[in-house]
Image (cartoon, rainbow over all chains, first blue to last red; front, side):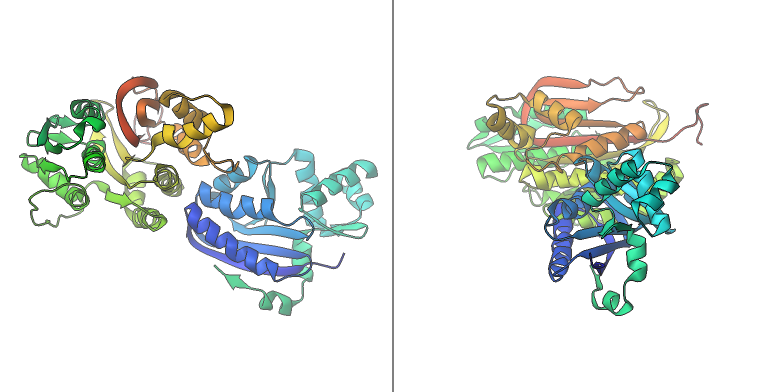
Length: 189
Length: 303
């Protein structure tokens, strides 16, 4: 698969009420609809003073639930701090969803409902950047078959990007993205 | 024709029950203009203030006649009602002889009475309360810094309940107190009320449609408050009340929700209130009371 395009969105201020959440999500979905191929949507929450449970459901959970299956849509929530975690985790866990995130300090973080072994595999891949199942199996001290199963599940949940026989973390995809593509597709909400 | 109702002299959540019992079934008000005689009121809580607005609004909806209100004679109570912007909100509900609004220095009020009609009102409440909430939560209740965010989120969710479920106007207000006799600690009291369809109207109809059986107000309150059930099929709904309940438990606080003829509560160890009541005087909408107590360490002092 070709590397996904990157769509940056900066979110600001007080994300409260379903009405606000729907408006923000609609804007993001419009932005993503302009891509005709795979896209990694990076939502930056550094400027978000607070997000309530309703808004977390409308933005984070519904973006993931409503992402068209036939088009590859990936989401990375960046700039996550303690004040964002509980509403987002609650919104995701309630529906058995999961989302890739990055803390303010740049550490990888999985939010929502995920078993420990999948989260561990996801973190290792994040640190490696990209890997084939054999390489990740070595890092995890698991068999190739088990590791392939973990990666297949992470792929199915759109937490990693499959590129032929290898798997790419969102962090690597961002680093590899051409600069002009990022500039062209930035927006603030 | 007027129907005169004496407002209890101490107007809190218990007296609200007395007040609506005195009013009786709203349907029987038809054609009669309600007059709330509050002249003897000597103490009123945020819940009591919103209770006056709720009773007035419900009567007005029923009769199409603006109810009347006789203000308290007690100077301190009048001053408190001014500070809480009661008369500003009351102007949309009652007919009364307006006295010029007075300006007061900010005291213990955390949030003056604010009508909730739209999501913009919720934004205004959440964004406007931040500095005062921070000062009171950190300095008086000794809560940790992240509590300011948690408090704002709780306020947002409880106000949204009005927009999402009541289909009606509602009000919110909050006040800090020192509960000397009852608890020996400072508390924040938040009151939120509406006179809309209530939990039965909101959740009960969907439940009946889905399961072919009707539920009582108490059963609907349990379903919403304890199990996070919602009238919406969307599985993301119903989080707000659950989140409020979890947060109140973390802070060892109390939350009480009244709707229809029932009440459900999260009761902390320091309180001896009922956890569930049915057969109360029937009243439209939902009435919420939240109490957040000062944090103390194990030996009873401020941490």
